[in-house]
Image (cartoon, rainbow, N blue to C red; front, side, top):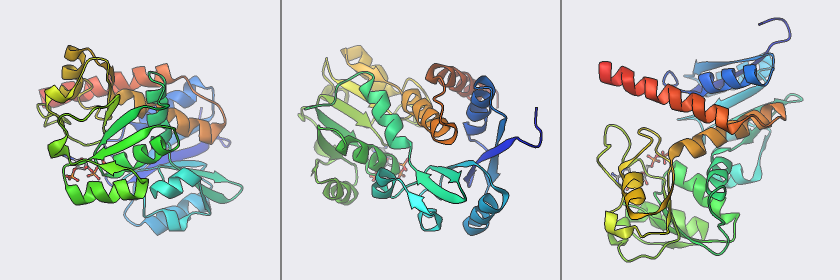
Length: 278
Ligand code: ATR
């Protein structure tokens, strides 16, 4: 029931109409018994949007492209790892202060650590874009060896330098030994479902392979990894946990990840059906 005590949350980005966040968060609020609603705001002028959040006392906001980095100078405080990543995907409006967090790195770590102990492991991180940055800094909080591997040399080398780790170009990845491989590129994402960032022969039985792509859920990379006998982690794991972490920052309560995962799985399969019909 929406009434005078209902708290307002939302997502700012451009575009945002495709976002699954309103569905996830509204369902979670209901499940958690909270009087709150979450809306999508397609923002043209970031400064005006920030003034609106402050002026109206919007309690919590998800931030998506293209604002994750641009928003930082407008905030009162930024969580340490989000500051290093230079990307904020979550705002908390607390005591008239806007605090910025990044839950992508937490979601990625939680998804990985549920399946594998990272300590002492050699982790190959594919990509050097925003997602790879978040995961790279996440891995730096753990005692593991990180190797960045990107298609474009200069971008990969730049991120590796920032993370103080090695860069191995994606084109010469064959023969590279790894305990964990993480795909943080968009290779394999719809409509390029038949692409994989890696040749199959790089994969070995016993490796853990995580893909952040969630459209489709079973990417070519994960399909091949399963065929070889790797442990696989699909894109829903990080996505659901980054959403759960947002809800925890806003409400102080941890929602059920399983529920969020099921809601997302249903929403994603509906989107695929619509695409097939359309
Ligand atoms: P995001 O913010 O989602 O990480 P991004 O900043 O556009 O998106 O970065 C996309 C990443 O996927 C980049 O590392 C890109 O490699 P380049 O730096 O060479 O462009 C990588 N990428 C995209 N398509 C790829 C493909 N088909 N094979 C390998 N890497 C790919």
